Amino acid sequence: MSKSTAVPANLSGESPAPTLPGANLPWQQRREQLRAWLQQHPVPKVPLDEVDAHFDSMPAHYWEQVMDGDIAWSLETVHGFFEMIARPNTPATTPFMDWRAEPQSKTTRVMLCTWDRHGLLAKAAAAFSALKLNIRQADVYTRSDNVVLDVFHVSEADGRTAITPQHMEEVTFLLAGALSEPPRFASLWACSRHKFLAQGSQMPPRVVFDNDAAVESTIVRIEAGDRLGLLYDVLQALAELGLNIKQATVQTEKEVAKDAFHVTDESGHKITDDTRLTEIRSRIESSIT
Image (cartoon, helix red, strand yellow):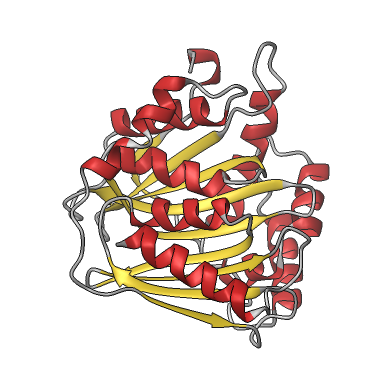
């Protein structure tokens, strides 16, 4: 990606952590308290109409999960995306990424903003895996205006080192190429090479479906031994099955990946057919092993 569309980096150290109000309130009340908080702490360069759009269009689970300091960072990231694609000769498919070091957890938090599209999350995971970077946690948010804001906690493959600025620039380049129309061959090749690098886990995967906890989606819960490229393989399987991911929570604890995906079928409905659920489970297990 050219310098004119390069992603800005925050390399000064830990992300700021002001205390935000209403941490234990229902999401609607917490959202309104956060709006009031922002009136007292406005985000420079982010216009009021963008703030209003963010508050009106972000899903409920964002307001339940947003952490200290992240509300301002979210607004800055979405603004950066809109500002970037407004530049001459910048394709609308170009992703915007910003990152902040987290020395205490020895990870880097990465915020990705772009337009929603099928298979987006799988391509993002592939870009990290191509550079042997490990996704330790991921939270996925899709606004009602089709803007995606995804947050990744990423480390080097050893799990003990935050990502270097050079690696982040390479991830951005690979992802931009994978999302371009048509995609760049170099990005597609690089994003598939993790399949030849990863070592399999001895832990058998566990796939469980939950059609009771969410009103409009089926929750797919997966536990598997963590390895390089695991998230990409699962996400690619879901994409190839034609499933739409509405929400995702990805966590790794003691080398065990514990992921939950809220999915719908091609028509936006829950998946209740036993034959279809069996097919999904088989495909996921095959992708992991």
